[in-house]
Image 1 (tube, rainbow, N blue to C red):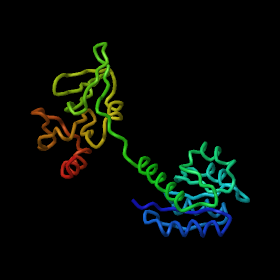
Image 2 (image 1 turned 90 degrees about the horizontal axis):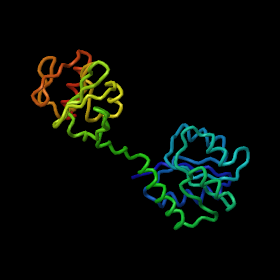
Image 3 (image 1 turned 90 degrees about the vertical axis):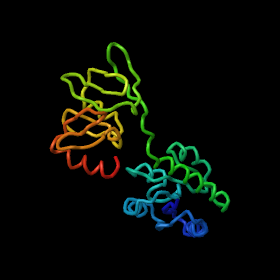
Image 4 (image 1 turned 180 degrees about the vertical axis):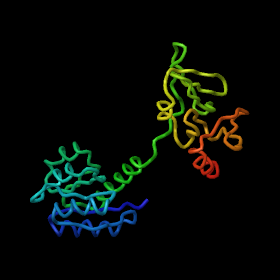
Length: 231
């Protein structure tokens, strides 16, 4: 995994050290550097680096103030000659804190830490495996893999599964928000279906576990596309 990175430091010699280290680190791609924190902040918004090496003690705008001003900050490794800033840096959820002069060994440790952090941040959340349904004065834990389709039923929803029919008092929209959209799809204003359960599409109906379920005209094109793509 290659990480794009950017350097902001008001000391050109410090930038040169980091640039030298970055050139020796295959997993890093340098997008640029700035000695002015205001210009650096604009560059971050324009270039969107994944990792920022940021000095703390700078004129005009400190690294800490800069980080607080960013609406969507990248992962940050603070670089400074002043250890007293460490606590404040970590309170801002910096990935690491490098004290100048920075050794290459310590630099690599920070990069590896940042890489693990970014991978964890970018990984998709694990889809829930159960749907909680309140029906018959009980709270049921229904495995997602057992659900075939859901049907709006007045103030209730019929949840058809392999083993049981559940009729919780809720709306189809509310349950749709809880279902993983890569597996379930609204195919009609009153029906949601588990895509892997569809046996075939015929006209304006799909058949899932031998039951015919209507397909709304506005949903059909997207349904065909997803069936062709495999879900």
